[in-house]
Image (cartoon, protein in one colour):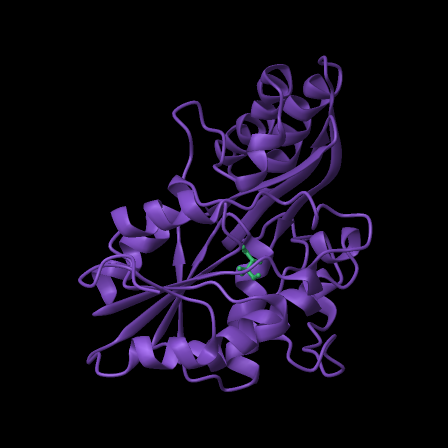
Length: 289
Ligand code: PAF
């Protein structure tokens, strides 16, 4: 289906995707999404637009990466609004397949195993999530055959795992990271923010506040202490911020930085629940830099 012959083309099947791509010359950049698009995705589209002749967006709420008690059913689906945002962002092709189109054999028996890096932090909290995520990312790379794939730093562990999969499986694609988009008060933009009530959003702001407090410190222990201080106060707020984890990790393998004299790249990450909504946020740091 063509929305406008010179603009964004919406396709639902692999055959339509191939037809939409045929005849286009030059590099292809892909931005993979689950829809409910916001300014964070727009930043990914902008970066993709600057790097490649053709920009493909995928919109697919991947059942494989949701646990049985997670929000797959209530995950926001807003195709019409998403298409409008894709058009405004000059996306060339939107691939929005059905579950049957993506998994023609039903539940896939063969999946990507994320290894130890996928078992900690988000992986520990969401068993199977990273296997489902890597499996769909691998499939979407196969289906869209891009030169570049763009991922937000907001999901830092996802980004690290995708990088590692591309390296370990020799996938012929370049992974490009795009900094997290934040609201003017510092809150990281996320599709799940729309679940928050006004009061919950006020409490949730403590996540970014804590990370920025950590970033003012120079050494690992002081960084963690500064974050904990802000989050301890947020834990007494109404509604409270219930901390799941605070992590200061090496971005290459997501191992915790234990050496108090560590110098090098790091990711400072938090996950917490506010009301019924679980939020994650992180900041990339250069310690001792
Ligand atoms: O980050 C997301 O939205 C999803 O995990 C992704 C990469 C689109 C895979 O379903």
